[in-house]
Image 1 (tube, chains in turn cyan, blue):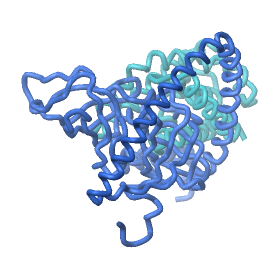
Image 2 (tube, chains in turn red, brown):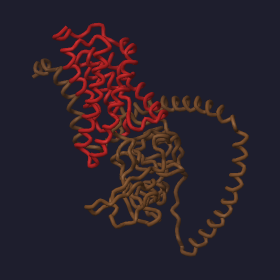
Image 3 (cartoon, chains in turn blue, green):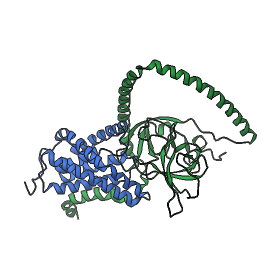
Length: 167
Length: 286
């Protein structure tokens, strides 16, 4: 059920983002709203449900690029696993750590995306240049994630995962 | 066997979700896949949402700009009248030149390529990833838009169609690192390749020999040799060409003719591989 909620929300947010980015002319950077959902799923869902949610968010992002290649579903699941691993040792119940995770995940996601694009494309340097927009992307995505926090709390599962080692 | 799957169910599920798309990506690289039924469903749902949002935002902004435009409209109208009179004079002389051009072409038995009516489309979104430079337009397969068709505005080239479904299409912009267009410097007729270098960066001038004549401010238009764009569509203006101390080629950038992040309406030219779509499927070509 939460998988469907995440997918629907991701579809809506990506549609709105595509229009806003066009309207305000963000030529250099983007807002990775989908990543905020992936991070939230990693921190608050069960492993299988979260992985499916992350995959669906990545799949939608892939479709929205115009040339779906399979890169973004894989990266979304990878980010999901890394955040989930890190979430075991950090208290993630408040907004602060959530925002921090989004910031790190956005930067990591961009670097991974550029790395894989560089690996498979003849025009590798062009993709590397797109890293120049990452700092702004991190800030905007973190702010978008924080703005989405109240909405995401509404699809939070009843049972939370076991607390981490340091809790 | 069943107990193995049962025991490692989680691991196998997550592993499959991670590795299946990754292997698919590494296998196909940057080519992308044909839109499947899920892709089509996603685009079928999202395109109308984007169209409605775009119309709403445009409506609000045009109301605001309409009010602002009323201020000082009288002075502007006077300027426009003067400009219109000058444009009429210029149009008359251009008509003369066109008629003369047609007569000369007829003398040389020159056959003009016929192209179907261009498809007017509205930009409804920019893609959500910084790695791919593409826009979405509100015309698709149902309107005759097909993969590979060139997309232009009155100012010049925009890109080419990389995916077309029912009512929407995606256009890879000239700035995408995978974009390579054949061009020609209008002044000297030197052939060049214009490549994208990622969002927010100028286009790159490729494969121009260092001894070729290329200057700052030269206009580059499409050569029509790449099988994508017709001849003579403006691509951009050459900026700061330099000849490095070593190497065969000149280095330079190109300022795009079209402000690609601000483009609102575009024209899709119904030709594929340089062939008008009306001629496709007829067997022999002219």
